[in-house]
Image 1: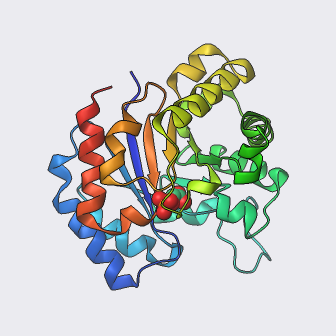
Image 2: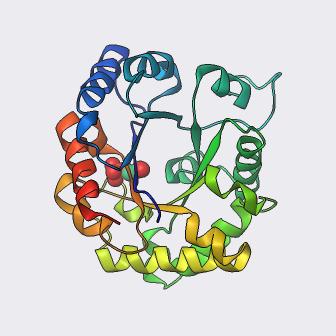
Length: 256
Ligand code: PGA
């Protein structure tokens, strides 16, 4: 049985003291998380402080990005060694804002996934998802398949426990528009079937596939009760303790 994994992507938000307050507020409520895995993904500059604030709670800490080179002249970038040193457990790769605003290529994203999986301490959370025009042109599945195949090229099936996929339709991110539970389920089932072909059925059965895009406490229960939706990657609604805890408790109530 796959556990539900709900992660809050804080993006480029919060001052250090705000990040600490949010992390501490969540840690204080962690007894209500039930069986749900919960993570927070602060900006790099807040990782240390947030890790200290959630210490002793079951909340994991991730990074919003990583660079694939080990070290050297890559101004502004952050290596896997640096993440491990901070106690980070996973990093996002290919968030739609990195794909579409920062123009990161499929090839670069694949190198990041492989760099993360090369470190046994780290996991990779690969985001995939279509633009509105791609959905309208009925290219949703083709886009997901392409992003999975390019992003996960060279990945070994044995790494399934350190890999998470987030399906995030770009038109639903930060827009207030949410995929319907059926749209989410269809994309997740397609993702799982694609992974079964790329790797094997056991891999596909084990991997957690999160949904992302305007998830909030009021719609989380319906989304998370879909059979192939194993969690949520939450942006805006993860910036408020009560709203984020509402999503987590909705997840806990779905009892996969
Ligand atoms: P949102 O962001 O919940 O604010 O739509 C989701 C994401 O970007 O992961």
